[in-house]
Image 1 (cartoon, rainbow, N blue to C red):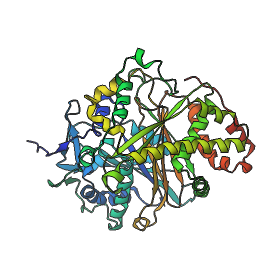
Image 2: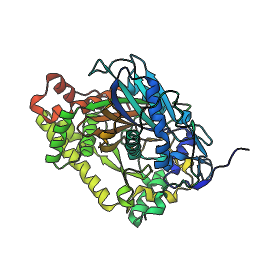
Image 3: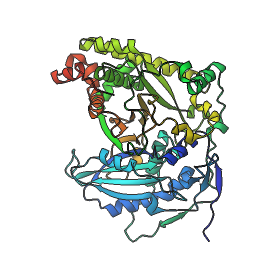
Length: 495
């Protein structure tokens, strides 16, 4: 008779959003990838053996890696402790064929659903490029991708995992292929326990005005609310039968020297990078979609500063807020006729975004969207009723910020190149998401993710070009003719 694992605790109100998405098949995973430069002659078995040896320490350090959930179709799903974790369930070595890039492989990983039953809600997929590294003929690229269910961790949890992984590798010596020092099945201690859910850590008070506004928007009849919102958000949400689940990924990098200049300019204008990136998106969309009258942006942020939870822990403590960019802001961006005017209007939009962010953070945790979750009777129905309707927002910008890795912990001859943060397609979410992370003294990675066929490719291309052109736009006197043309000219697209 199979061993029955222990109940750890009920799934919390925020976590139920992600168990419900699994029921509907509308969101699979978060992936945080560390990309390294390694010697070309390093054998795959050596890499596998090293990472294999690190897994027991990771399980001990992060209880979220030792659980699964059940009852997701009920009103009261629960987390259970895994009795054992099999290494072949959580560690894979793959090759990236010539002609393919890492974004294409991440797309495939995001489209893989999670198994049901007592299986881990994460896996470490190690992807080795078969071609030589672009910066060295004696090296190849190794992408270490943590793929995990959003129910066990937010974006910052991915960085926490990679930090723990490097710290664990520091104390592990290379082992031969026939070394059996680490078992293939690792027992999970009965004492394993999860962090408390968000509702048990902090109070999320709602003012009567905030609650009434949200309830009115959600439940008031259409004739009373008036005409639906006119914001652009790609195609309306569809069932998976109408539009099969397929994640698209486009990665843009801003290299260290250019990033240093962008950050310097942001500091001089007293605007955080997230607000500048948001303004860039709004500018590009305003140019590309001259008929659009409003965009709505979503900015997730962490509640850890309120709960007191360290950034080194794997938990899900994220929330978000929305900002509308109405016609008057879009008109100013469209009327900018030269580089100087465009830079000025870009900073004005970034300050507008920052003001809303500042106001949101100042009142947190009061009048927070997460505080409305106790009033959701069914999380599955909450998402079901969005099908066929206009998406509630245009885009999301999720910025993990700067990662300072413990570089002294890197295995011998490994060099950290960059990080990439991606999310799966969101059929009931925004039209596209921009996922950001940077490395100390390194590049900024901007990964655009979207559901295939929901928005046109050339809109995504324009957003990607907007990011890559940003350092040159801020240095408007150095604009090349090609960049100037791309920044100034836009094409109108249907929704």
